[in-house]
Length: 340
Ligand SMILES: C[S@@+](CC[C@H](N)C(=O)[O-])C[C@H]1O[C@@H](n2cnc3c(N)ncnc32)[C@H](O)[C@@H]1O
Image (tube, rainbow, N blue to C red):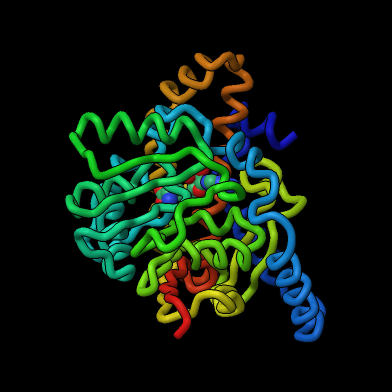
């Protein structure tokens, strides 16, 4: 029903926005249900799930849903650096290009990146951070990892075109990725931990990949107080199967193998503005996006349904991150180092 309506474009955006705001309100009430004792019991159950089992569950689903879409499609939606994660809108910033670069710059500052370092970009997407590091830190050696061949091919082509020789991209599922012990000065991961389930095991493995003075920098989207799994909702099934909404505090529970040294929040309105910019680009080039999706063997109707789904995804997440002036859904940054 919803898909058909979205595909035909007959559901007004105003109605989708009202529904999404209600969804944000519902989510907070739902995750707070039963008062403090039930909330604590749910947190314990979540922590149990995040300390047992595989690092990532059903990784092939995330690929289908986002990461093996044609690079050209994401090229329409995303900014020039194809940063598929929250950007930073300083006062006076009017372009997605600037917002991408300002967040990349802040990320490197907070991670303490210096030229000459050995750096791993874990969950590298279409190379926004890997290519930025290769460009800004010419003596650094960068390895980017993701489970998408399409992403690797795109980044490699960019690196060739721009003459970067300090960057290698590996296609691997995080569940299986095993670099040398003690190899990296920095492991940086931007909006990949939300796809991961067993954070404890992932952080344990990362701790072995780091040099003694190495650090892990993590950027996740988050809720201020309520962590939850994406289950049985439209967004969970279409866009984020086995995904997780961390709370800002959740990382403090995973300090067995690495120690939290600093953390920061970015108000949600920065993400909302990023989503508005992505939606505006998709709308401005909708015909091109439809033709691209059809060229992959979809009928026009199927392409319209997919595009309608993307519009709802961008529009509803915009509403969620701007909810209550961006003080509820946020972006969280963490810096972790070795114990002792
Ligand atoms: C939201 S994107 C972020 C991309 C990039 N860090 C950025 O900021 O533009 C998440 C990334 O994590 C990768 N990813 C998700 N699950 C993965 C898994 N199981 N193994 C390896 N990479 C994974 C995706 O392919 C994608 O590159």
